[in-house]
Length: 506
Image 1 (cartoon, helix red, strand yellow):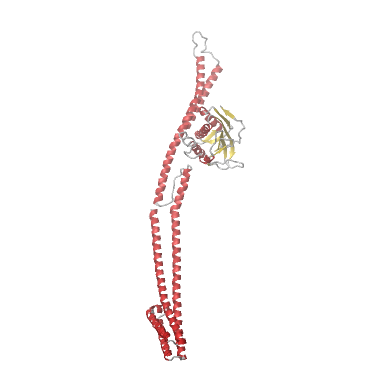
Image 2: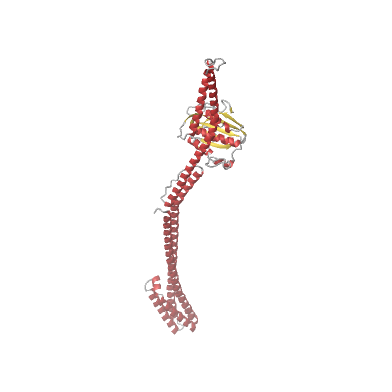
């Protein structure tokens, strides 16, 4: 039986049958107690008749009135009638032939009363009447006591059975609750945890250790949604990368103009020196300064290599390749990225870079460049037409004494050598209630149509891919501060920001 609905229906059907059975037993017990009560009323009626008979006996013995004797005879006849009617009941309570014995005593009592009535005032006959009367009353009291004991025993048994039934139902309900908790609540709690992870950007698939068909179908549907969401997220990430690539291309085009212009100028000068001079001008084809020629050729070679590096950086950035970790000079990477973004920097924004040229991180250069590209563009957008951006870095050791870095998330291993990169701007900062969400996918504080909400999410993914951490806070002076901790290249000497002085990028 794989269906959870069928199992729950079966459990509740079993509970319903159990409750119906226990209710039937309780009704039978109540009927038995009612019968005991009716039997008790019969015994009580017999005992009351015997007492009334004794009362008129005493009145007759004391006052000798004829009416008392008649009433006594009437109650005596009623006692004999009740004994005859309730013979099975009395024998069942006290024992076999008890009714016969009691009837014989009543007969002897009646004879003694008749003798006394015939010999009025005789003390012997009066004593004989009292003796047989006391014997009958004693037997009646014993009979009433036995009936009360039987009724009390029935009530006690009923209470015990009722308590047992309640305990059994409670235990079965508890077991049913545990079964539901194990079969339903725990898998649903697991799904809730995974959904919270999805809400925070972690697209982890749902694996349920449950044989229930409904939960399996729900898990499959949930995983299908995750697969679709992951596919669309990859599409949006590619679109975001293409947008960044467009930004980078405009900077590359601007950067390529400089080396190409220098190459063109040097080539024209060389052509003028080596080509034959026009008629009427001095000879120049075979002349010229050799040192100048050498310098011009060296400039052509240098600028060609510069253009090649720019194109290679562009191809590396645009290529969709696997993660490749290598030593990356941080200062060079920051300066190259700022050069590419020169055309996107507002005229009133100043950039200060304070990074030791010897700082080398271990990572994938194109991915790290995309990280810087997204953060710097965000800072330019936040500051508007004027402001200042500070980019600094220093060596650190994760988890060391005095380490005040608190990463939002990541994989910074305590004790591992690292490099802390900071980007601070003078923009409006980040609203405090949104700080915890800025790295979530599709979350943006920009106006509709001006941001996909994937820029900082990609930054976070790149940092986690490198085994680093990131935190975002607001500066007391105003503006946002992003702190990034990346793994340092091994055997790197310690350094601190400011050793080489701050450098303004123009």
